[in-house]
Length: 382
Ligand SMILES: C[S@@+](CC[C@H](N)C(=O)[O-])C[C@H]1O[C@@H](n2cnc3c(N)ncnc32)[C@H](O)[C@@H]1O
Image (cartoon, rainbow, N blue to C red; front, side, top):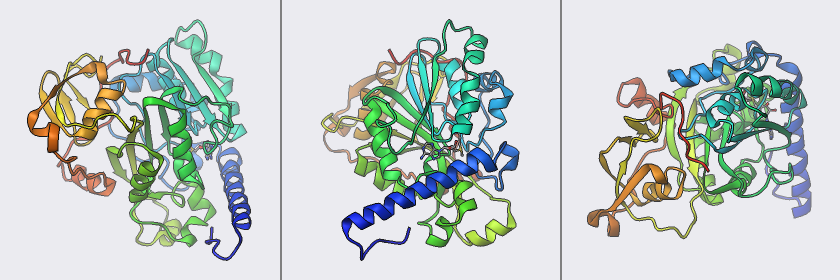
């Protein structure tokens, strides 16, 4: 939207609302009518090559109905560790592939809510609620699907401070108002909760001619955030600084669209943002992972910088220490104050630039992190 510099405040907000409605309608049309299955996508943005998928996730995916997986348009793997018993919200769940995959991993005592604004997508998702509950051997479904906008979660009927984890797979880029998406997500997360999401990011802020192209927007490129803007918005909303999990290049593979994109580059990246109470202490310390998370017995790949090996002391800065202490991971670690880091160690300078990570991964400089587990999950959320 062109900037609304000359109009009055109320004119500007009307203009903004009408611009947002137009984008929502275009995106609904794209995912409700234009696309019938993943095969109809015009670029490879929504189906970016995934990292090797751990066996337990492959198995969980195999048990999702093909009518659901046929309409999968995600760009990453949104499976954080320690899921059993958790209450999860999937923003822009589409036909429900990730909801049904995670339904198995949270188990019967956990619960997943899928939220989407497009009726056609929800129709497919809802059709298979009972089918999946039966297939997974649950006495009643642990999934539900809600129609609504991710920019207005409470309006959609979702309760504040009620989710352990929010996931989202290639959806935030489609929003005309990313600040509201992050703010609403923050509000419905419990303290210590986490937004774990995969999305498309650009190498710099995109110009109006790319942002206003309907196909580029629908294909998850036109609305991509510059990754530095994600860092800024997360801080504005109150999240702890983003932790980067993994990144992979988007090649587009469509000559006509590539020529419109010029030198702008895109990656699919997975970040984790934690909601940590502002007043909790942020003192560096030594932590030791107890190796108790099923499937991550040997090591827990927390992000692209920290892999915690079982029973091995690791010095972490105040940010990481507070995340581990205040989140569902608290019971999985022991914490020892380290005199060297407790008083004055500044937060570690850690790059969260997905383009840099992607380069490093290509040259073999770091391992990929897909959540780091290889087996079924153990209860972390009660
Ligand atoms: C690229 S698809 C991804 C769907 C799903 N996450 C998957 O992996 O298959 C984007 C989905 O987000 C939904 N969506 C886009 N903007 C939305 C918004 N503002 N609020 C709710 N849902 C939205 C669309 O309806 C569509 O189903």
